[in-house]
Image (cartoon, rainbow, N blue to C red; front, side, top):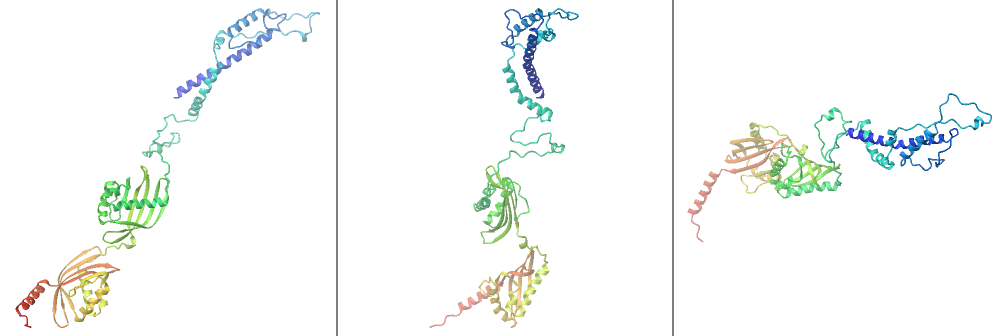
Length: 453
């Protein structure tokens, strides 16, 4: 590229020099002819204009001018003398004498031939066309311009003159064409959550996945596995959407950037079974393929509501029954009721009514405690879990009158407010003895005739 530009620049310089040649030649010819008119005793040739250059075009009559100059030089050249002659009495004063003859230098034939056929308009056009090329050449040669082809419209790169060695060797590549900023308001950002929530209501995980960007990331509430591709995101929502969740933002803060937006705060989900769960959320939205999509979604449990699992042994679980039995010995229904959680359930032995509140539980124990019961576990099975435990088997009660009753029991314990309490209590009579007693009563009623009226 530089070689071509240098050749064009040389051609332009040659044309400019050729353009100046005719002007220099005309000036020389003018001087020669003007001096020849004042030669001693000389007079202009016959039929020659006293001012021969007035109507002469130096660009159109080169050959004619050459012949005229040669003839004039030969005709008016004085003989060589060693010394000027002495002035006579009749001679004119020195101040009035004509100056000695000085012939103009004769141009060579090659110099005159190079000027033939030169058109000034062609030279001017060459200068006009070549000027931008000359400027481009000067920029590249003198200012160290980059001669590599310009980058394609789909990429962005820095000139090699400003890149360091570390930048040149970096594996980082341009991200692509820079898009113009897409305007979006905070209200429109909040509506993007509504689109995602409506997708949940469809019950179709594929619809929900479409709300995420191609390279979207999901850090879900109830899974330790980050979801970095559409297949993994869909896998999470298959289980989550089985609960029929409906989301609602309780509070949040929105920030709008250049082709991205952020919405972070606290949202709440209501499930088909009526349960409600709060969580923290972060949504990062990006503009992709003409739509706003979720690029990053992070959901987490409320940390203050998360209770760490409390370790408990089977011996400790069996000891919870002893705490309940000691409460029976107090004879105070409220003390017994204090051993149950706030939302505990009691299915008592001798009542057809299920007890779902602490008041109803206390009501049952008013009558049961009058018999002065003392309980004892005969056999049972204990299981433990994260913040819960189970003890189920057979127990026996001895009353103040000396009677005893066996029953089956199920205790489910939960860790509430720093204490292990009864969340579920199911007690029932032994079915075999009860069935035998019911059969005996039925047989007696059948054998005894009804009294006559």
